[in-house]
Image 1 (cartoon, helix red, strand yellow):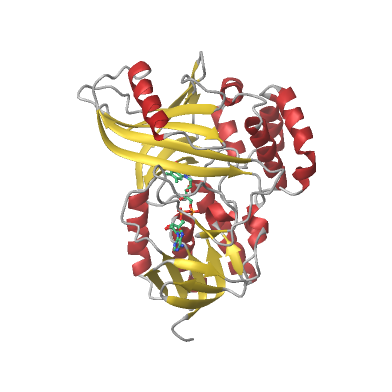
Image 2 (cartoon, helix red, strand yellow):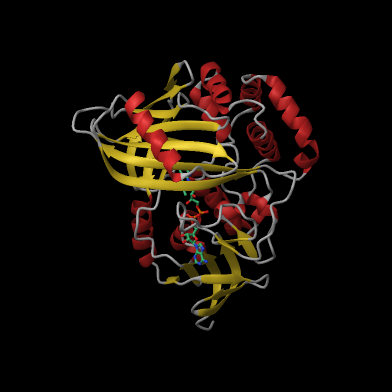
Length: 405
Ligand SMILES: Cc1cc2nc3c(=O)[nH]c(=O)nc-3n(C[C@H](O)[C@H](O)[C@H](O)COP(=O)(O)OP(=O)(O)OC[C@H]3O[C@@H](n4cnc5c(N)ncnc54)[C@H](O)[C@@H]3O)c2cc1C
């Protein structure tokens, strides 16, 4: 096999690309195969933090930065303690994950990493880069998208993580929302946080006709990450995120003096557009581009671990990668689609929806539902918790598209 031919090319070495590369590194099945991982970025910055819930028997990367056993939820006029057991809430810092993955991959000679910009990928699995062309038997793409999933670069958002190739207009009938957020890690001179309790969602800030909440991840009594989050069709002005954070810290955390140590800004697409359906023979979409983000929640970290493992297990068994293994069950895709339509059309304010879930149901049931592990009976209980009318309206409006999500 010549220098530029590979069995597997992984285009994009963020969360999903690295997760797949790590599976190719550690499994005997891939030992004779040549794998190339390409990213334009060296991944030397802490560009994000990932939070997720998990039970103790789930397999997690050994780079957990902090774990919490307790969370709470604030609706407009209500505080709900969330009993997580058997789940716990974890946080992984991007930089810890990248550094760990790089060290692990460097132990395996069949995995090669290069840093260069990918300009395009064709249907015959040739990857075109600033350093020339590479040909793969299989190409796994998490770097380029044909769908405008994220906003264009701007002063607020200078480096969108995905590159557009042959951009298409968003298709009508699907919901295209953004989950956008700005977070500050703040340090206070006096003890101000309970380091054992995460504020999972706080809906007390003004909703402005959208779904807006803050979450608080305390690292110690003096340090916490406070993040203002919006579900809406367009980004806010930079001043809005800052003003909301300042007001929340003053009004709800009762903190007057603090220092902002680090900032995070992020945008996650929330859409029911069937991203995974767009596969071209040997080119398989993974990560955000491949529909790994849970459309109704924006969570993707644990889903990426689980989907990748299931996909590679199946590949080992059958000898060929099967992208259909990466798809969520249809029933959950339909629920996500209806839920997005409810939010997108403003049929039910997000704070009422989430308050009804956490008020009426045990948290582990909600988590299992979002993990797509809920039993039939649990699913019925969950569907019964929020007011029914907005969901019936949304299902009616969405009827035709539900076949295609
Ligand atoms: C700030 C932030 C915080 C998040 N927090 C959470 C969270 O708490 N919990 C959760 O479950 N999910 C979270 N998410 C959602 C999701 O888990 C992440 O977006 C995740 O990183 C998606 O993985 P990915 O592999 O699809 O994309 P990325 O991790 O973004 O990887 C894509 C890679 O492609 C590379 N690339 C792009 N274009 C090119 C090109 N032209 N050439 C070469 N390389 C290219 C990029 O450099 C990048 O490394 C968060 C997302 C963001 C942005």
